[in-house]
Every structure is written in structure tokens, then in C-alpha cells.
Image (cartoon, rainbow, N blue to C red):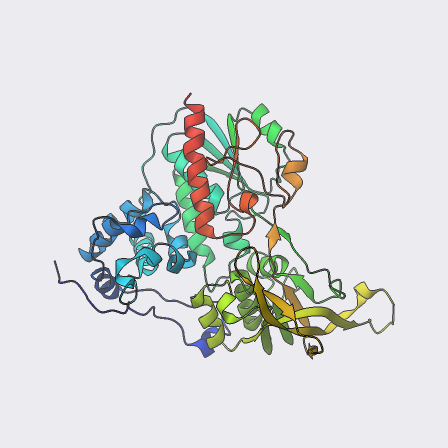
Length: 471
């Protein structure tokens, strides 16, 4: 085997030029070549105590798969990853490795950690380009399980149960499977054909997908049990957007990030003749500082916006989005208005001069400057308004990206299912809800969180469902 690569820096990820990519929806990062992947894998020390594995919510055997990459056995690496992860090509792109597995990497003590996420992406992409092989499954055991939602938690739970021999049906409310992976994450960060490939693999494992089925409306959870399903996993996500409650939020040109991204990603509003309208051109303000805010801002830019602002009430140090996404946004020309908070969205009425504010159009947004005060209960310094510091931004579109909550539909139609004050389904450590045979995980429990944490919850619940049905 080749010598270890002791370069303190990881191999850079090849990307499109910022000025080019800012006007197209092609994937920003183009991926490692075989040569780069092997060179990066040789930075791994293959630590015996494997601290990186402890930082992974789905416990991928990281040093083992990287050892296979060192040998050039990319399919062998994929087989190791797929034993614990149902969505490796997805995780390699959107998982925040820098705060999880890579944060535990020993190489990160005196330099940069091994590019674990970049290697996972490479391995998954290599497999998808060279092999149609899917993970093996146990013989069918005749037991039926229903999974509500085809996002990361639902797909992970379905995949693990299919491997164990269960007859799994996934019920998806929208017309395309993938949940937030297809409606929430833009093409330039997670191509739709990558998600489709992962979903296709689950179908090859025997998972049945039913789209356009709204659980709580088309069917209830109780009716699923009447249909012969012996357990139900709820992974319906957190699709109910939050707003600030400031004047002007009902004006035309104000979107939630959920609506804006769904129109662009899943309803193809970026086309020249879209079936659903969306802003194109003008100036755009995105309120919020998370990954979804970055996605919305960068999508608006690609739709033709002249200027795009990120308006966030704290400083860059508190910005919750991934550093890579922030850097990409800055490179593409998005302006960050930090320590600012909106107080009102300004607008005017239609030419026929109706007085209904819902007929008005956005013309700007009033903001006030902030400073960081004393820490709150979570240790974050609380933003405080600076009196007399108001100013206006000249914008035509405002996108609110300040979080989402679980939709109350399933709770309101399922007797015995309890939720907390934020609308999240109450579960035990293994994902069991207050209703017998019903498990839940992901954003439906926690509110908006990461893809990998949702996958981890789906994995935990799959194990618990197997134990429940094996009694």
C-alpha cells in the first residue's frame, strides 16, 4: 500500500467557477477523481478507537470504508457504507460532516480532518456509475410495516426494515418521493437524479412507494392498521413554515422558504413557461441564517435576481448554516446584512387602487440594526435592537426562512398520539410514540434539523419496530 499522505490540508473539492455557477442549476461541486480520492484516503490514520464513527449518527464504519478506497476497491467501500446507510450519495453531499464525524478526526488536531464526506460522496457516485447491485435483504417474513413520509428518516427506516425482511410501504403526500431531499434542497446542491437513484435502490429491495397519499386525509394512521400493517413509522417532516408576525407579510412577493424552494425544486417554476409562478429578477431579501436560507438565496440568484441579501439578526459567528454553504454564497455575490432584523415589509396597492393589503406588492423592507447582549438560556448572546438605527432595503421579494414546525394534520386525526408544545410528536429514546405500534422520528419529532439526524432517528426506529414485532 502507498505511504500515508501527511499533508495537513485535505484535498480541495473541485467546483464550478462562482460567476458561472451563479446563473445555472448544475451541481456546484464536481467531485473527486479516483486519483484525488485515493490521495485523500491516504490521509486517514485508521485509528484503532475510530473516534470518527462515534460522531456519525448512523455509525458508518468510516476507517474501514476509507481503507478500501486506499486500495482502489471502491465497490468494497460502498458495500461497507451501505451496511449502515441507505442514502450514501445524499449524505456525502448534504451531511454537516464538519460538526460530526470530521470534528472527531485525529488529523484535525494539527491540521484539517480527513475529507470523510467527500470520500463518501465519491464512493457512492462511483458505485452508481459502475454498478446496479443493491444491498442484500433477508427473506420476506410476511409482516407489514407502513412508513409515512419519504424523506430521509422515512427512507432510512424503510431501507433497514426491508433488509430485515419486512414488507414495507412508504406513503408520500407529494407526487414525487424524496421528501425534503427533492422539494427543499436545490439541484445545485443535491441533484434530483441522485435522490431518484437512492429511491430506486429501495424499490429494488422490495419497498413499495405510494405517492399522492396524505396520511391524515386520504388515509388515517388507524386505517393503516385496519389494512393489515402491524406497525407505523411517522417521518412526515416539519413542513409548516414560521413567520415573524410583522406588518406586510401578506403582501404579494413574500414567500416562506418552503414555498419558494418547493415551487423551484419540485414544481419546476424555474422554467420559461412554468405551471406555477415564482419571482424572477429584482432584488431579494432572505430572512434567516440557516442552510435553508442559503439555499433560498442562491436559488433566487439563479432565477435572475439582481441583488440578493441575507438578513440575519446575529453575527457571522452565530450563523447556523454550514461554513461551506456560506462561503459558496459569498463567492457567488450574495450580500450578508448581519446584526439586522426586519420590522416591516413595505408595499403598494395594485393599479386599480384596491385597499386590500393582500393585493399589494413588495417595494422594500424596513430593518433595525442589532447588537449582541447577554447570553440566553442556550448560551447564545441575545440580539438587542439599537434605538434609532432603522433603515430600509430596496427589495421586490422577501423570503422568510426562520424555521418550520411539524404539520398538525396527523396528530389531529390520530387518537392517542401526543405532541409537545412545539407540535413535535413525543417519543421515547427508541422512537416509540404514546400510541402502541406507532413510531416517529426526524423533523416530525424534533422540528427542522439535519438530514443525517433524521436518518439516525429512522434507523433507531427501524431497530425498535423489529424488536416490537419479534416479541
